[in-house]
Amino acid sequence: MLIDGPRPTTLVGVKRLAKQLKKTNGIKHSDALDLAAKSADCVNFRHAQRTLPASEFTRSKPYVLLTIYWSDKKRGHRCGRETLRTELSTPILDLCSKSALKYVRGFGTLRMVAEDHFVCDDIAPSQEYARDQLCAAERSLRFMEHTGLRPNRDRKKYPRVLDTDKLPNIDHSTDWVDPASEQFVLIDEPYGNVPDETERAAWADRNGWRIAKASWPGMYRPYECDLYVGIDARSGYDLEALVAKICAMPAPVVSENWTGESVSSWETFLSPMAKTKQDERRARCKGMIYPSASKATVPYNYNPGCSLRRPVGELGINGHVQAGRVIKAVMSSQYATDGVYTRLSALRSDLEAWLSLEIGPGQLEGPEFFEVYYRKTDDDKVFQKSMTAAGDFVEALRELASLFRKAYPDCAPLRQQLRRIEMSATIIEKSRRLAS
Image (cartoon, rainbow, N blue to C red; front, side, top):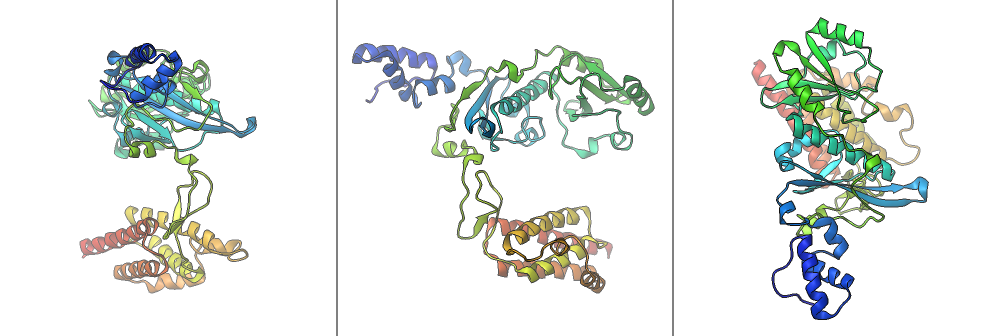
């Protein structure tokens, strides 16, 4: 049945239209609600209740929806979805950038699928676990909202003293920065009554720091852990003002007082801002998707949610041994800068996984398998000695890239490894030119 006229965009509008439909069409009120909801691009009235704003007034308020799907094998394979709606004072990406959110407690496994919606691609082991994770994410948002702090992503701002002289009883700590002053702030959340306050005071005096305990129950495990704030006292930063902001925060959301939506199915939840087919595909939890092979790649395994893939084809045992020999030689050379070492370390980790999936039963068992990429053999040492100049390592890396192109078809997993090899070769070439 087509509905002429303006389509409702709020729950109030849906209810108003339903009353009209009930009178004009002589249908049941529940059917009228479902029909009115469909005119608002919702599946039914229940869908409208969970996605549409109550009124135009609530529509103007920023919010974010956080979703986790779960499956409880211990309780007869029950499954479901938990979604928590959080009202915000400002849009979430104004509060914290999408890249920085990955460093915020509770958001590490959440993926932004719409401007108002984040979804976890991992299936939680229970309903309680899902709720705990969502509540932790909500508490982190509240912390940023009230304090103005943002997750610290700059290793240079991390105080060296925290590495050289560890804070006694530090636990569940997170690193923050005040964007206005660039001040580093340590938030430490050990279990209650665990820290030795005398030791902590001595540490603070010894290193010129100040450590203050807040009354707010915290982000990690409220009412089980305490929250401490630490700063370098020599910076002149107003610690009292920050602690006062934290103490004035409202009581943290906890799973025992769950206020979110709970649904006993894996039907994909769509937020109000998910309008297109692409939005619908993006909103689907990857943990519920069964991977399949393509012409150029195959998944590591066929379990739901497996996102790791490798190229079709085989490098062969001899090819992997050659690759391992080159990688080990470069990584142990004088040309292994941080950039080279990091890239080749990731490369050999992936290649070892490919090797384990390419070989058959009984091949390279025990120590022989680990020798390929991680343990130096006598032949590896001879090869290392034959490499006398930077150009030798560059040539060996590019020959390795050529070997990969012959063994595997062009695909994203292969291109990732080729980039690591080429970048490593380029870095070595640049360092050689600078040295000369």
